[in-house]
Image 1 (cartoon, one colour):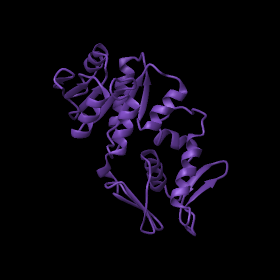
Image 2: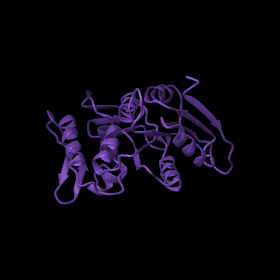
Image 3: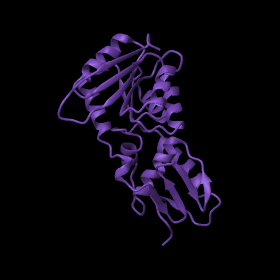
Length: 242
C-alpha cells in the first residue's frame, strides 16, 4: 500500500485538528488539493484507487473525505455507497469532471454530502469542506427520536415501527431523521433539498417525491395510523394523529 498511500502531516493554529482522506487517482491533482488544505488540516492521507480509499475510510476515523468519481479498481460512486451501507457517516465531498445535473444527482444519491465539478477553485473546495465540517455532531442531539410508535436510533441506525424493524437505505434514513427532528411541522421541498441532499439549487427532478413514496411504503404501509403526510402546495409533515 505504500506506493499508493502518501501521508502529509500539517501543523496549524486557531482551529481543531482535522483528519482528511483524499481519494484521487491523479497524483498531481491529489497533491494540489492537499497543498490547498494545509491551513485547514492537521493530517492528510492520500489513496489513489477506490478500493484502497474504501479500506482506509472503513478502518480509520476521518473528519472529511474528498473522493474523485472516476477511480481505478472501485469507482467513487461505488466506494461511497459501500461506506454508507456500512454505516459510515463521515462527510464526503465528491469531485468530478462530470458536472451535469444528472451526474450531481447520481453522486448525491450514492451518499455524497456535496458535489463539486472540475475544474474548481481551491477557495470553493475549502469553503465547501468547511461547511461540511460545521455540521452538528451527533452527540449534540438526542440519540432516540420518536413519533407515536415509530422509533429511530441515531447510534445503531435502527428504525422500528410498533417494534417491527424497518429497513432503510442511507438516504431514506437521513430523510426520516430530518422529518422526525421537525415532527409536527411542515418541511418544504427546499428544506429537504438543502438539508438532506445538500443541494443549494433545485435540480427539478422527482428525487424527493420518489424517496417520500418509498419511505411512506416502509413506515406506514400495513399500519392503521399514517404518520407521513403530504401537505398540498407546501411540503410534508411527519406527525401522530391528533
